[in-house]
Length: 246
Image (cartoon, rainbow, N blue to C red; front, side, top):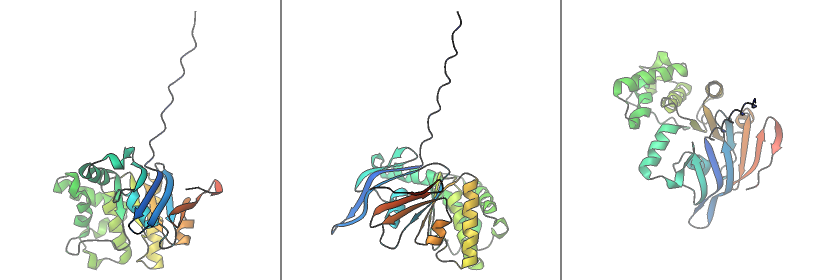
């Protein structure tokens, strides 16, 4: 008697890189920077968190980057619930899974590009020779391998930001958080940086750009719009506007 073959086991859905469920952030004096925010970011996404000053997007950066914990609600990064982690484990999670790019680069003036990038691995227990080898590979990814021996004062603004991006990528994080990455750059340099972010995303890096610039936001495939601590729209190419209630 023949039996039908057993169905193949279903593959579990991949764990989202970021999950926020009803996340709030309140400060003394009754200031609510986040009001019941729900957001899921899947691996491989490229999105903007966009809104005017005071909208809550900078608080979102800190919460998504585990630099700050929510007052209430749940935040998971790569499946790990942030509130359940000790400070040491939280630091390890951040070092392993999250890369940061800031508007003003934060490069060490007395160190060349290779060592500035290698510093991104300082807390990962990687030996110096390997740190530098991986730093040179990361600089090649941002097309700056020919500038590895140059110090920040010898680099243009766009090159400094690309060094900062290489530093954020050297640990191969799941998530790259870019806070106003073109804010200190001229238009041409800013366009190069945005092209680079698109290229890195095409190679698999999950990238979230925090910005007040609607032109930049509109160039990305997903836009999460903030106002008064709430998500007021979540726009994707396959849906003109996906309203999100917070």
